[in-house]
Length: 240
Image (spheres, helix red, strand yellow):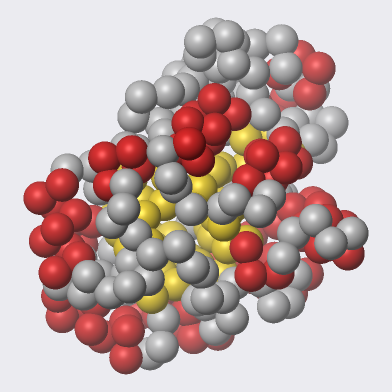
């Protein structure tokens, strides 16, 4: 394990608490997490809400698409244990001075408003530039965000490595690449690291699995149970 091995609380402490809620993020921080990961979608009135799915059924008591609901309607829903769907700004405020936040641009059209929000908060001195990592499955969103928020560390997300993924990583000079854990090998880790980038795996919840990937030289993992791995991570983030 390197001194800066990273363990990212995937949607907060989502293995024990409702994912992507302030409760899950708060519990992750209390467990010692120094990284939080969240997913962003846009409401019908362009609010940046923290929820993974495009639809409401799996994680709330609502029904239908997030994108057709106004913020006021979304905030009436129960996201688990009485929790509400949070705003991105609320999670950033919770994490301020305590954790680096990986914002996954999950919904279409999220790149521009996220870049604007981060720009405002950075100008106000509320977010150090090196405490945000923007990631996405979608090339369009990540590319647009890179243009609108130069200097913010970036990461493409994919199920497996590919020439297209490597091309995008090179073009955007990304900080890290995030891949599904089963697609990762010792050789791939070394190959990515030779390009000066980090390789992170999702989603790792078993201790033996984490130890194997760590021993291979992996840079970090996403986990639903960050409390299981307290003390196994480095605290610093080196963006760029």
